Length: 147
Image (cartoon, rainbow, N blue to C red):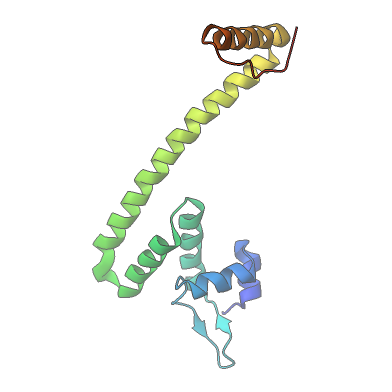
């Protein structure tokens, strides 16, 4: 079974414009064209497209995705290169995940602070401390809030 670009766009949640862009960037060399010259996607193409979307969603650069697809097009002899590229990308994802977790902890801390019944007093204390620190260092007070 084959799918049109519009059908694929609906299936994968991308626009036809994005799919055409990916094609122009060399990410879809595995997609054949039918007798009328239109892209004819197969189920196998959808599997590769799923991988491309995964790589893009996890922050891989288009140039690296293109390199990965080039390796795929080379066949089994490029498995070691694929593994190396994906392993490096995995390390980047894990580092990104660690940064997100650190930031999530800060957001959770602030949510806990603002959910505390004494939130107003606690925020007032934070503000007073920040103002005091600026004053002690001879810096202008950028906080317009007054008592």
